[in-house]
Length: 233
Image (tube, rainbow, N blue to C red; front, side, top):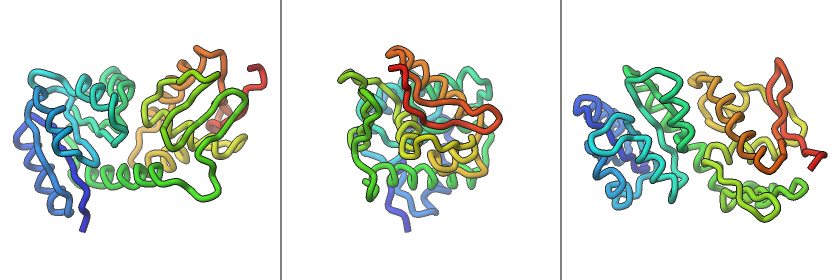
């Protein structure tokens, strides 16, 4: 049986209860919140391992809640929404959400995604043997323990998922990974992912690195992406 704690922040009572019942039956400890105004305080008091967060909420919306939580925590956040447009998905990923699920959804798919995110989070939170906590590429330093990337001693502010993409690719310099391989290795969600999400994240990472005139993630057209040291820095 699982002992992980899940916080569900959802104002629709039927959806909230459906998720609670399914997740409880899987052995999770579940707490529910129906109002955006109390979501952050509920998060702080419950200290969950993962959050299911609706975008449209009374008082404070899910985007703002996610942004606030991300300022102090790297735990997985799964956004759910009745909106299927790219704008809401990009906004959610941009403030640090790890996944985006459109209503109506299959409860079993949500459970599969939750378990996968928890597995990935544990993997990235556990130091790997033979892989240094800090990797240096020129003046870029990737610190796996602190989830920080610095360039010339200045921190490049990344979301947890952006960091995990960089951390994974930089473990295998010059090795090309397809979008499918990246999604499987970073999200742990083989078969469930929207592969366009990868392109969104890579674009955001490049925008942040470009502020320092460096680009370590190279596109291999028709294949995928690879990590390659920027020789022009």
